[in-house]
Length: 193
Image 1: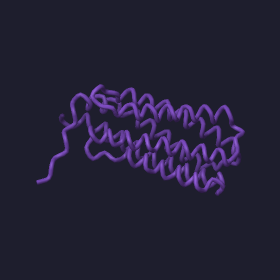
Image 2: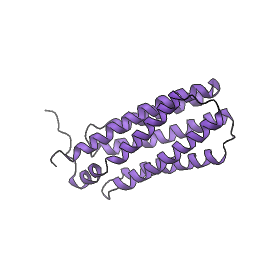
Image 3: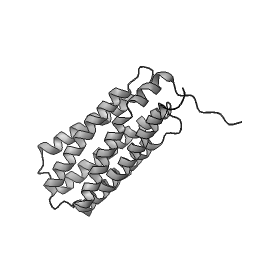
Image 4: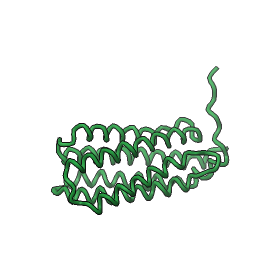
């Protein structure tokens, strides 16, 4: 006989369902970021650096908002998302303060950011599965982020333009994954406890 997934605790269902808009906003921003990179190929590494720095900082701030909104004393999932948000803000600030970094350094910087953020998102996704049975969207976004980071690390001189296309793809896939997560969380409000 198959076991049924544990019911979602009423104490965590409310905050998750009430703040479904945070991952939706993060997903929309990631989607717009990816589309802009595809539609307007950047001719300058400096322009890409500024765009990436702004995206990482904004995504970090929204990650912290999401962590604090979803924080609940009975779960520990919020601190992983909080660390991912802090990491994003730090990467964004460093990137914006030092825009003249080389393509190689930038590639490794993006690689480190993608790997670290990916692992935090995977951890947060597994913690979220305890409250939302069957949830995989955040885990998928984290796995894709880690794969992206590893690929950029091993092929940094393959051209920053190639990295732009890969990052644009990441932004679109992560955007759809976060939007899917948002609507799944929104659906929690419509289901009985």
